Amino acid sequence: MKRIQFIRNITAAALALTLAGCGKKDAATAGGQPVLRVGFFPNITHAQGLIGYHDTATKAAEGWFEKATGAKVEWYPFNAGPSAIEALLSGSIDVTYVGPNPVLNGYTRTKGADIRVLAGAARGGSALVVQPGAGLKTPADFRGKKIASPQLGNTQDVAARAWLKAGGLNITTSGGDAFVVPTQNPDQLDLFKRKQLDAVWTVEPWVSRLELEAGAELLLEQKDSIITLVATSAKSLENKRELLKKFVAAHDALTAKVAAEPAWAKPLISAALEKATTKPIPAPLLDRAWPRLTFVNNAKAEDFTALQRDAKSVGLLPEEADLAKLFVQP
Image (cartoon, rainbow, N blue to C red; front, side):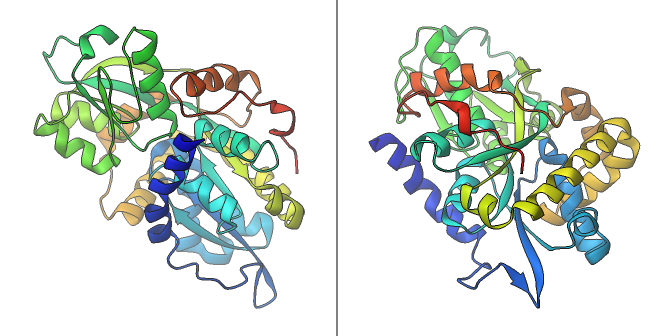
């Protein structure tokens, strides 16, 4: 449990910064109108969240999720999953787009009493890239090398550690035969350009940025793995079930539209990323990243079997949990 507590400690600072605007007020209603607080990441793997965030900023009460739920929707950006799960557990947000490994960590840590998956959102979109011409092909080649991941315990971090360990390397949370270095996505690119990282395991659009701007070579792509889910807490489900039911229905409809109409979705995603990060995403970059993603609204227990095994094998999950209570329909 010490390692799991360590994950909680390192996310506390990021969580405090992200939610500084939330305060201690009762966020159930605003002037009699229900409030729904939603987490998301500024990555195209969170396309539905980005579009919702953009709609709220530009259309207010006429936004996609506002019209569907009748609620005042507030959006909170996170860099990686562990921070978002901490926010759910603390009650700072009601629902979030998030990766599967942080969901498993939160669910297991609370012995199945908290964290619930409401829907899937996307598959694919994550990959391992390496320095050009470095000759890194197999886990054994990474001995003594530095590999960046977005955050300790997030989905790509676990994938990197498990892949290296399965290849025969001794990997610990602080080092081992190779070093998995939790590094925020924007910093990964700069460090990679300066040759201070040998490889990066991350998500789109950062995978494509590393390829286009730093000449990174694609070594391994996770084409079919679940990358983004919609998750909530048991408390939010109890207190806001009807609101969450409407949110999920709106998410499902938006997922279908994003998948069917990329020409409609891409400009909205680009505008949302510019608002969230102050930098627009160039059309060529978005076009390169898009085919690596499949937008879905289903999530299955089978998706989590290997994820549980991998997280436990690298010491980031104390035990494999019974998933019977993880998936719910509000």
